[in-house]
Length: 461
Image (cartoon, rainbow, N blue to C red; front, side, top):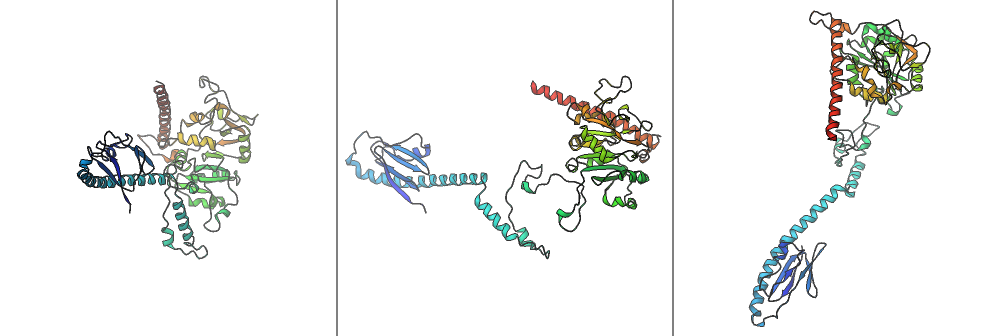
């Protein structure tokens, strides 16, 4: 319990006054006009007299109360005035002391709470450590038994880490895993012993069962440095188990979908970040003259962030840029039909590969994935925009690998997945959608560029 201290503040026929630094409430309450004595009864206060002032110590603050003397004490009225002043001073001081003391203690409590919220309290760390120590027996690794009560009784520490991925701010950074992979793992044993070898590259094919023999030939061209992922557009997956390698690849099935639909939904950059290069290939490619390991060597040698194998000139050739050159390892520029290229270093004469068999570096794919539109599933027009996803000059980072070439077999399997619309054959309806998507994609890019530039203009103004 706090001790009440009674101390005479002034002995004068004139009023005592307080320093202007004291609050109005205290200043108006520590003297009695025309009184002889005034007292302060303050719970927890200490007053120390000076020559012509009093020190009023409240917490850590030292207040000065001044005394003015202009006349002598009138002895004739001393008795009555002493009694009246004493009674009133005691009552007034009592209430002032309670009021100020309570307010002061509340402020101290609030400040203490603020400090504890900013600093990590040692008591909190000790408490959490003790609870963790008690919970170590919650799971017996040898028997597998669990003490559920011990597992659930730990009071979690309060955590907020703004640099964590969005939505994971309440987790300690050490437990956050923001990236993943397609490594297949066992259901038993030590996790650290699951993988005999981690593939460094990822190859995806969008396939139908009718092309199984062609895909079988393709898969055999890739060593165990490559992880294989099959996207099945016809829903037939178990039949592929006739191939031994099928048991070691990833199968994803969604009927009548394109490879860019799959890529947008299953090849997020954080999912494929474990792989240096990502192949996103069609199913109708002949690979007799292709060696995957040698291809990677050439891509690294020539600094290609986005590439494709050269195409055999006699089969399924649309662009001159993709045609294989027999006299070199790689080419990065070409000559096209008159009027097709406004600049020899721009698509389709340079900085260009087709969407049939592209290969992306991990860095380039992180950009390209964000450019793929959810609703534009065919990817037409994407090849002309790929140069946005490499550092300039783009024509030095995008190219065709000539010495490792493939054959485009031009099998219209995707067209057979369509439906007749307005009297058009299924394949024709699919092609109409492709052309429409190209126009839509280009319009979105142009609009986005304009919006960005307009924003810069407004910002400068």
